[in-house]
Image (tube, rainbow, N blue to C red; front, top):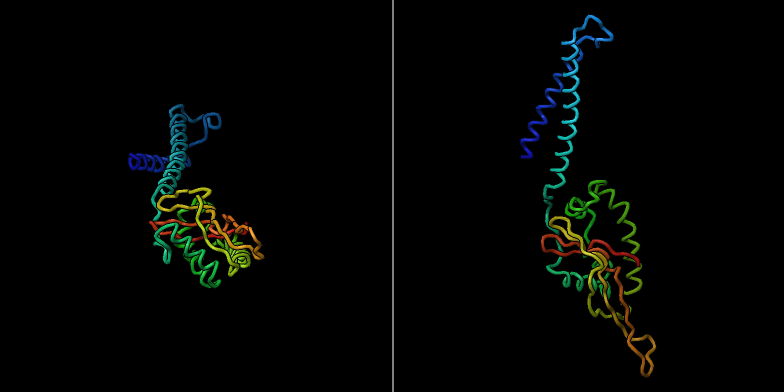
Length: 226
């Protein structure tokens, strides 16, 4: 049905072009040219109406093509180095944060190239900016600063992972899901234990700031400072 509409609208565009050519060859209006007959004036009016209809049809075609492109499924390569479940991804990321090196932790994150080629086109913001712009504007420096902060807080500081909470939100974009702000529960012994002292507990929902789930693979995209 949509294809038939497009063919019909394209036909109107062609007629509009013909009408435009015809209009350039017709005489001025009856008021401007008393010699023009009513039949000629009517013909010119019909051509002008056809030209206007063709212009409207052209806009409709462009709108329909844009809508078709928006609704078409996005196909990109699979994520590499992710995990088969959210729980597995979280445990791997947190173990690197608590006891690993920055390089090991960085390897758990979606890289710039992977984001641009495998993630960005699935997200709504792809309609208004490129993956390069999104990365440089919202990810590059903020994420680096956030990782520095988290390493200073947790790395080799005696914390122990306890459990995960529920994500603040899960957003579906075709074959891709965005899990946002997943709480991580920690505990550690007090630095100066005393008789009857309690274990220190902490909940942080900014370490797993944004986890991308794509085709059954989970991988950390962003870390927030707070």
